[in-house]
Length: 202
Image 1 (cartoon, helix red, strand yellow):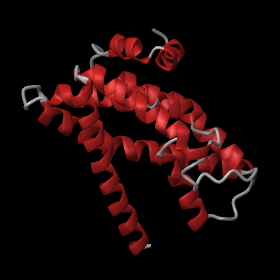
Image 2 (cartoon, rainbow, N blue to C red):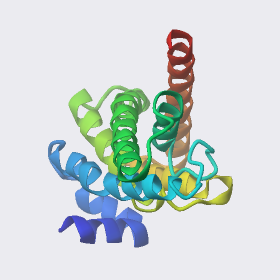
Image 3 (cartoon, one colour):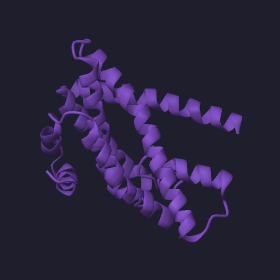
Image 4 (cartoon, rainbow, N blue to C red):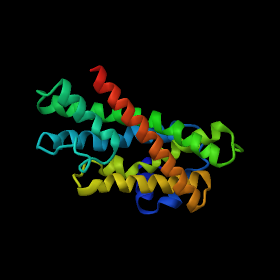
């Protein structure tokens, strides 16, 4: 299945799409997916920020990773303009995606491994978590640049990631909700702690 068709299927029929990639081996597929579609929101949000859209406001952002760019630019390069601003903003959004992915995948894999009673191989849990996090983030990759009230695109992406967790780990709804809540809470605590230390250091 082509990347474009997969992205389309994830948007309109997520459970079927996630089922179709469940047997995918390795990490190449989801990582390429990130590196292709992550640029959509990265570039578009960089361009819209030139026209006054404030992506440091979580209500406008399609995911937590997107908050990284305006934070860095606002503190260290506030005078960037034009295409330079868009390019730097886009690269920083992609860096944010990579950082959050590197944090989220092992946490989700560990949570799922524990919830499966440690019966699944850890490498399998890690691969499944990679697919759940990255394929589930499709709404954020494609529409995270759209200014929206109440973090709606971010919530959409979180819901799709929950559906991906359900499918990749073959969980029932109760385990899915518990796994996603644990994952989001742990990542949130780590994120807040890292942000605090960053501000203290710089």
